[in-house]
Image 1: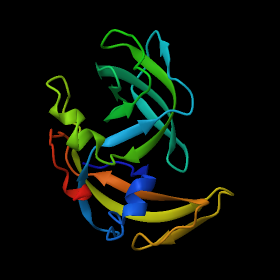
Image 2: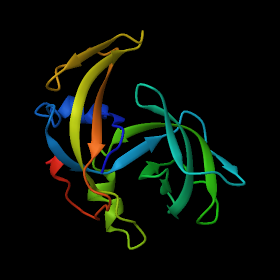
Image 3: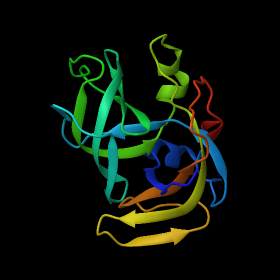
Length: 178
């Protein structure tokens, strides 16, 4: 499978706990994708599922709703990802198309240890290979590393990954997080 790498943010809790300190270029990991929304996604009449890279781990996205529970939902942007929401997920029918900006992040454990246990949860865990690691400052300046380093408070850690398999699996324990 040939594809462009996805830029995926490492969650602050993963960096603070040291769970990601052993990640390095070339390493293979299994994890689900989480998407964060700077503004609510908007329901639209239609559109082709897509993720268009804007910068950092931000994408312009069009996706189809796959699953919606009270405090989380899954949208397929060509690759499925979940979002935690509070107070509640937007009310909509499965299959509704949404559009907007998303920020992709590695699942900090919510899907693997909680949401995947719901009968309605679709499989979201893919195998990935890290092809690049960078620290991006709020000023936009990026530094590249071969291993996840210690980061300053004004930096975001982004791993660039290629997906290794077409089909996701459903898991309650993700090796990347152990």
